[in-house]
Length: 223
Length: 231
Image 1 (cartoon, one colour):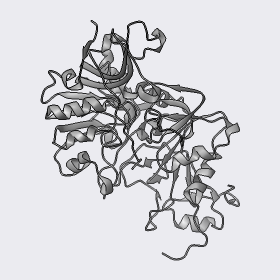
Image 2 (tube, chains in turn purple, cyan; image 1 turned 30 degrees about the vertical axis):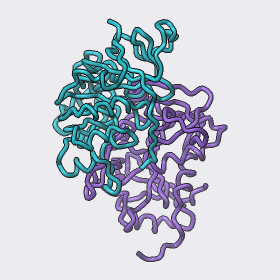
Image 3 (cartoon, one colour; image 1 turned 135 degrees about the vertical axis):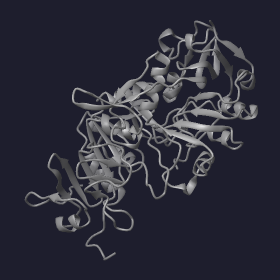
Image 4 (tube, helix red, strand yellow; image 1 turned 90 degrees about the horizontal axis):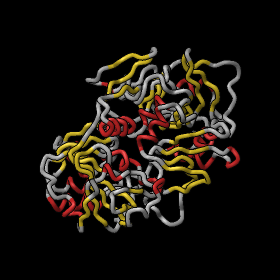
């Protein structure tokens, strides 16, 4: 692979950029992997209510104190509780998710199509993969943000005209935040909203296998 | 009818036979019925259909695969996207030795809820246009496509709660309700391990999460510490 103009964003910087998308007071579910990092970057004064599909509304950060195996998030990580937190069973939790009561879900992604289809649970050439709560969050959350790497490790685009991996949901993605760009999914396809510092829209488009609409000057991501 | 109390998890499994479908409560480390799982292992019951949200992800359900006791799993987390660090269940799945029905977690919870509530099916948008839709009826309502999903019911449910009273009411601690509270409603024989048994009336009525009507058998066990490293 040719040398790139600038480093790509770290996972932490991607998470930081996603955190800026969360409206104050909103209810948010963070998927496993990179999305779990987002919580740490939401300012406390934003009063984000974090939902975890194993049955918690209002968890805080990761617990570093005494381990309590009954107090974990959906990724199995020990967490703390914020004042006002509540517990419920899995059917109630997914009623919350599928009933449209979650403002924003942040999920990881393997591929996103120009129509906003998401594939994030299975890599066919490796076999296997598990669905967990991803399909429910994909259709149930009012807004879906996908946080992922712009390309595969060997440089192939993950943003495509059509997904080749098994789908998680059809037409469900609203915003893609990658280590190179912020891209909005709309009725007319993909719009390039921001690029990583040092990257040009043309360089990002060259690593994207779907048309990107560019309106005016594309700003660098503010972090 | 009030619940029956047993001295050991092995005795609490009396009558559970080969070929049973078994719902297993818990979510990763939270309120997983490890004592009952290990009793099932000691019992050697075979050809089981295990219904659980996860198998081999921080739970000890995977221990039943050591001697090949599980023939089929119905789960939302069962196989990793790479085989770099496979559980025994995954190894057996990749070798074609066990069957897996992979179900979205919300659909799994709702199918169990429906099974326990006498509901013959429900419509959900989850899974439309995905592999999950294969073989399922797609129905339209108010311009949206929905999958018709069918209820789940099992022969046996094994659960973990925090406290029980002598009537059989259960209360869970922290995020322990998870699949336990739903599965309590959806099996012919419901067996719960609890950390503490208190006299009837000692649990505040508004802190009872599983009313006694659902619970058949109770055994007191010290909880087993389980911890998942997240991989």
